[in-house]
Length: 231
Image (cartoon, rainbow, N blue to C red; front, side):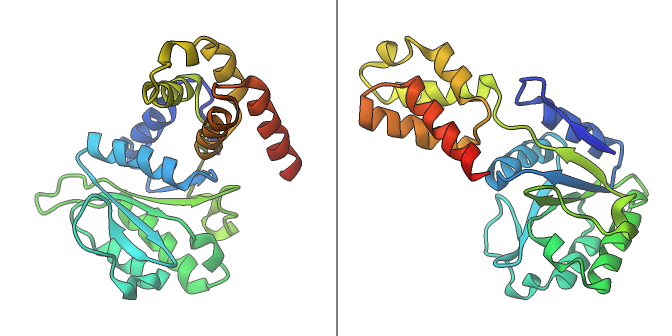
């Protein structure tokens, strides 16, 4: 099943993921091109649940977010990374950024399935439920092989909401002595920015300030057209 949260509330998707974690969903597949934003959102979910967030990439290996020390180089191997998270006795969210590139490997697919199965029934030393969720992230959502597709809950991570964009405007305007003037057309600018990623929004707002000295709707719409043409 594919879930989507498009209610204009930036916290809506995080509430959805939190509910899935509480329900002990062991494998999630998230579609988004905004790795940093998804990581931040999952970090908030993890903190609210008293869990650790681990992130894996093929370049850096497995690392614990907000913990001291660098990732272990040997965990750049996806099998070793999956072995480590399965053995983790603390519970957590385990975000894998590049794993879909390794799905041709039967061994990798088996480890994903083994982790999902083990996470569903994991308990701590006192036999209490241990909350562990493996999260696969890719721009279009991981193209899951048939042998693990039915075990994953597919989620579309929404683009920034009006509230998130309005906050970004406030941050930019707050750095200027012309704050009130810059926010005069805030509603129109927020509306124009809808549909852009967080990075694209930040870039176009900075560009408008440099080129026009204000948040300019025309500049935003031009940026959106360029993104649409490139898509």
